[in-house]
Image 1 (cartoon, rainbow, N blue to C red):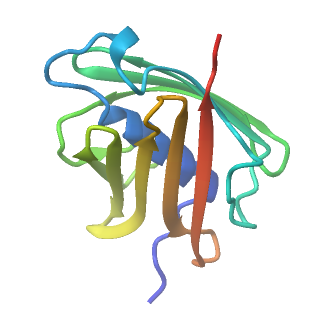
Image 2: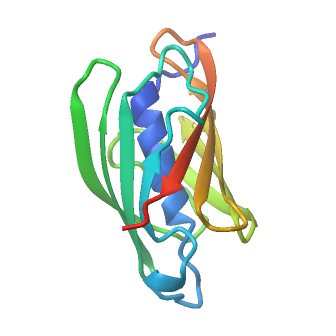
Length: 166
């Protein structure tokens, strides 16, 4: 049986959005102090991208408040088309619809204070799984993403983001 299709670029950005949803602390940690807050740029040289998902660039700006995470992303997909947008996500550990992917839901949970696990589902079936880890020094964010592409082919990739110093 063929798995539901999730475009690679959409899975990547939805997974990234969900990552930052889990970054909200119940204690209401300020944006300046939260490990995920700030600007991040994909380091293509350090990343292991799947041949079907060779986006040319990706960057994110994350703002964390007590109950909402805002993610503004920009990038260039493998076809050379620029993509951008802003998403607000509410973090509570429950299934939430992914606005950018109607019919899909995502759930996030912490494996540790620096590692978040995210699962995407469609019709109750898992169609994507990701983990996100902040390095000890807080300068690197590593996203490990699994899913299925347009042809139904399974893929895995690791995207390394560097914190912008600006």
